[in-house]
Image (cartoon, rainbow, N blue to C red; front, side):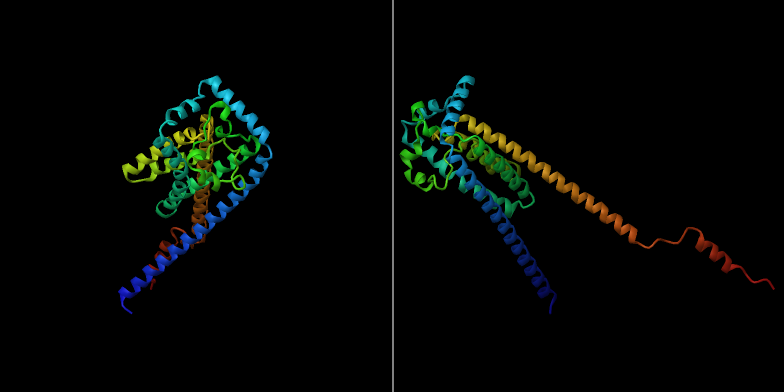
Length: 289
């Protein structure tokens, strides 16, 4: 067997091992996503039983936004309602700028930035967990359910197939706050800015959250305050994830120190200083006749 053959076999073994690791990682991530989907479904059932509370909370949000001068959703919608191309653009980004970008970004992180992936994965899970708690205890009807305030559901008007796919059987319609459409795209935009090598991709990381914020408001799916809350849960998720990573690094350092101490304690101790010299001195003495 030649050295080249051995090298090729070793390379093939390494590639197969890397593929197995990626498959194992994908399997674990699928399990996490399924668990999150199950939790979401359970919370969806709780929230759907509190429709009256969801509409009462909507009135509270509108009143609060008016009190601080940020109730601008209907004014912003008014800017695009007379322009079909603008409505279509807002609808398209709301629909296609979320799950496709979300999935693509996670695949990119897993395959191209695996060292950074746990930080963002944990941030998604932590922010999602907090959002589930908010959904359960503060159900909120989205603006599109309140046409009496001047809101228009642009997606139902122009993209009915999307609403059909997102039936109340599968989607919690009273989970407007926080907006994970905005929050998770903001998080993934941060990942693009921090980890992408090309300036164009980093610029897209800045642009994506801005466009998503515009789309969630212009389509009548979220209040401005929902986006603020979305940013808040992302800050919580990132902080939690950073603390987890620091804790993991601390454990790794402690384990390395403990291992080094164990290795040192197992090494044979050298003879005490001076003994060899004394022995040599005794052996070198000449016999006296």
